[in-house]
Length: 221
Length: 231
Picture 1 (cartoon, rainbow over the protein chains, first blue to last red):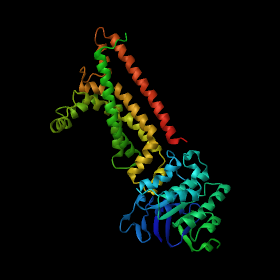
Picture 2: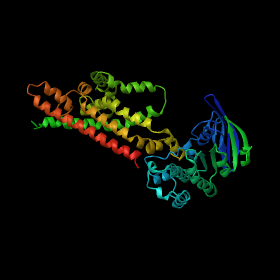
Picture 3: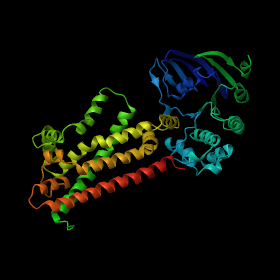
Picture 4: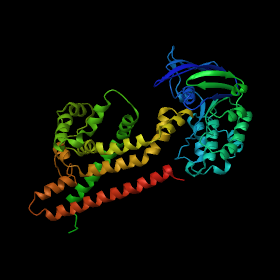
């Protein structure tokens, strides 16, 4: 369960959002500039809210009144960025292994094999990110986030930088990810069709405020 | 002509030792300072920034004299070091290393700072979301990606340290075998009636060292860049 109730002044733009989601995939929907990325950056701990509370499964991550701010590296929240952000000096195998090393988790070859098969990236392991296509890079980014064993996965328009063909190449992997990985996700997108396929719950954001909340059907209204 | 005498060898060896020690000690400090200046905002930052670049614009003899006042036997820090730890810097080769380190510091820090500033902060954020604590982000992402600049700074610092003259001679004088580096040896030889040949030999040696350092830095930088952006 993810509980968010925050406000943040960003220039002359006020972001105020409050929602509680139990969904497997919470779709954060809105036009660009609606504050979607700022909102998930707050969930990730990369941006601090001016005021408010963020909690996950009853554990408080931010509470400005109690001066609580858990830094991003202690949140165990995975993040897939629109621009992949793979480490250019590490090959795919080392990128995938990064989260496990940083969290000092025990080696889990079974999970690694499962994720690599799920995303079909077994042939890329020895390559550097510079030698990957946009779609391959994004798949590796999914794998890297998954293998850090997060309790929540944030996806910020992960298909945004890809052309139509590539989107259709990735979308099936995301559906499998949702159905097989068992990690709750917050999926940011401005594409209603994408969210209809993936999300189980929708938070609609317009110029910094939530205008609708509910099942996928709110997308049609 | 190329019969290098024992005293000349001593000066060459001493120069190499002083510059190497100065660079090796200045490097971790330089990386830390470069990171602070590139990544943190704090009170007094512009003051520290100015202080670091001061040796570049001050007359070297002024820097040397200030070192003598501070680290000399009767200096504030020098007296404490001598009494508490038994470390004497004035008129010793270790003092020469300190003078060279201070004088070369601005040149050493600058490329390090620029290369750390050039590291994409988005990658550092990504590392944090994967569970890396700030020091782990620094060691596994920032530093490896800034490596070409770190090496460039080390080479520049080394080259400056090996050529340093004014501050060194003021602080530790020109004692053969203890503080006489190539530069101060050349200076002494030009004051001596038949010193020309020997001075010229040391000039050639210093040109050789400088050229080698530059070529080495080029090779290092190219390798490091390939490692960072390589395929």
